[in-house]
Image 1 (cartoon, protein in one colour):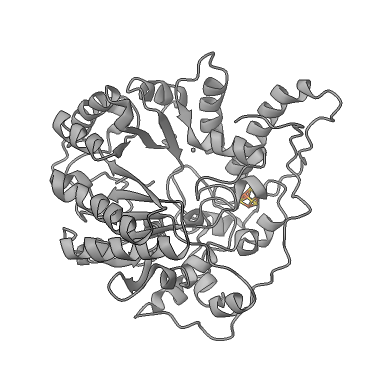
Image 2 (image 1 turned 180 degrees about the vertical axis):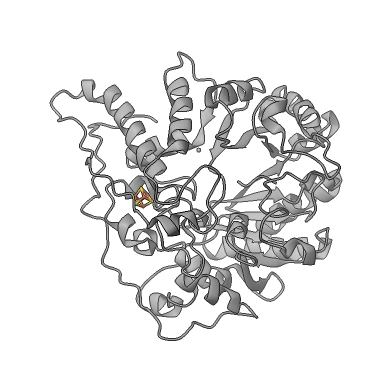
Amino acid sequence: MNRWDAGLPEPVHVSLSVPASTSLSLSLPVLPAPTSLPGPLDVHRVRAPWPYGEVDAAGLRAGGHRAQPLRQFVFKVRSRCNLACRYCYVYEMGDRGWREQPAVMAAGTVRVAAERIAEHAAAHRLGRVDVVLHGGEPLLAGDQELIAPVRAVRAAVGRQSPGTSVTASVQTNGTLLTAHRVDALAAAGIRVGVSLDGGLARHNRRRVDRGGRAGFPAAARGLRLLARRPEAFAGVLTVVDLQQDPVETYESLLAFRPPSVALLLPLGNWSNPPPGRHPGSAATPYADWLIAVFERWWNEPVRRTRIRVFEEIIALLLGLPAATETLGLAPATTAVIETDGSLEQADSLKSAYDGAARTGMDVRSHSMDELIGHPGFVARQLGVDGLAGECRRCPVVRVCGGGHYPHRYRDGAGFRQPSVYCADLERLVRYVADSLAQQVQPLHPAHPAPTVPVASTAPTVPDAEAAS
Ligand code: SF4
């Protein structure tokens, strides 16, 4: 598991100012006493007072806040992995929850979860739900076991919510892919996404098994199989590594002909900073790395793949809704179903503190509607009202959205800081905006040049805090 999707409408006038319609009026009720959470989850209130001690989910609901339905459901079909990547946030970082999980999701748990998802889709008249098969390493499961959650959800949705379509994908390290497995997944309508640190062996030095043996040769074999089956290939997911050359990393991934590349920022936060990121520093090493890739991708005569982070920024600049939870202000709508049936928040929260993704709910006792009432979900569906003051005043907030939620964490305070990548995000958004404006502004000479405020809003912190 690794730690981590334009046309041009007229008139085109790229502006990064916060739209006047942006609502900042919803004031969050602040509770004098902790909210009641299900189960023994007091750790949340200690480690993350915001939102767990300060956001009044019931008060917000009474005040008119409407919970958004869940649309993506991650099935942890296996809780163990055949690799032991040295940066893995599940097995090698703070969260030890996997030790308590059964290795395999039981067939009964799959059936109950599928009925819960179908019930939710019917109640909210969802046009589509997405099923993601995840782990651990999901391909440790045999073909029938792996496909079972997708079949179960399609069957349950077919009975309860026939107007809802079901898409399915699996996120794997790629080492267990064979031609037979690719055929089986393609026949079941399940697209395959592969996590890789780059297209060369030396990019993947930290992707090893428990004996220290390299995982790259087997992953590369799997990727070559997928390159011949584009209908089954979802894309490659790569975490940015500042130690690697950005353009070489991008070009090496293209050798596998991925339809899309997700370039993710490493998980980290204000208390546990990402590699090479000094919290509060004005330096922008991650933006610089990504901009080098952007320049190559943006200026290619033929588009060879999609790069999600750039397409997402462009879409948001043009006023289109966010398609991911890492940028923009769209509500979080992903739920995770662990192998024992526990309902959790996104895995990436596990990089913050042990138990950060837990909700105390499970598919046997709780509906998906109950899950979106949990303070952790409520906090991630507040849009701009759930952000720190610096972010609410920031000229690029509509695009940046305060950054990925786990990157905002500070131990003992919670998730209401700007992203630890704030300076990088602001620079990247402005760079893409300027590149886009250079392309579209000549088409509309009557319009003024893009308005991008100059002053940086990157927050600063005292040196001692930055070093902690
Ligand atoms: S650039 Fe920084 S201040 Fe602006 S929205 Fe993003 S994280 Fe917040």
